[in-house]
Structures are given as structure tokens and as C-alpha cells.
Picture 1 (cartoon, helix red, strand yellow):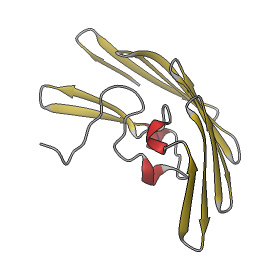
Picture 2 (cartoon, rainbow, N blue to C red):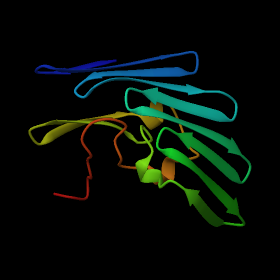
Picture 3 (cartoon, one colour):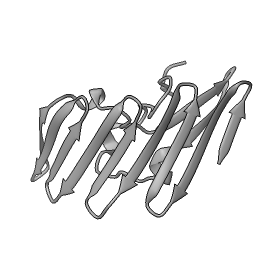
Length: 133
């Protein structure tokens, strides 16, 4: 998939459990990969690697480490804040003077382990919140 607007371009390619997002605004190549219980995201500003086991998420990133434990519905967080982790977001939001496009990375590369925390944070680029006029 290719999206172009004026001098900006975004390309998304998926193949064999790998998804690559290339952007020239901001300039970055972000690679998403998944194995059975681990997914990683790497790019120019760092990396994040999430290991998912029943009841526990272990997150290592260029911003630091974190863990999330879920015991009987009670979540315990420790380590670096999830909002500080690079590339852990919903997608790319492209705005065209009031009209926008969402490249929904969570549909192309599902990350259900963290989906509840990254709903409107962009993977790269400017943030977008549909609740703010």
C-alpha cells in the first residue's frame, strides 16, 4: 500500500509475519515482526520487544524496560511508562486539511497484548485524537 500527499509518502508492505512501514515525513523505516509469543518493532528512534506469557508482559525497549502482570483482573505495572515506548502505537494519521486517513497498523500487524494502551498514539508522526475538535 502506498499513500502520497504533496511531497510526503508512506509505504506499508507485509510479508511472512513481517510488516514494514516506510515514511519520508518523518523519515523512518519501521519494521514489525512477530513470533509465537514475541513481537518486536525497530526503527530509527529505537526499538521495543514485547514477550507475552500467560498473565505477564515483559517489555524491553531503547527507552527502558517494563513489565505488566495481570492476576485475576488486577494489573500491576512496573518500569518505564508505556507512553514513553517508541513505536508502540495505533497507526499513522495523515491529515489533509480537515480530512484524514488512518493507516491502521493494528489491523495489519495485530498486537492484542498492548492494544488497550495505544489506541490513539501514532506509531510515527503527529498524534491524533478523534475526541478533540
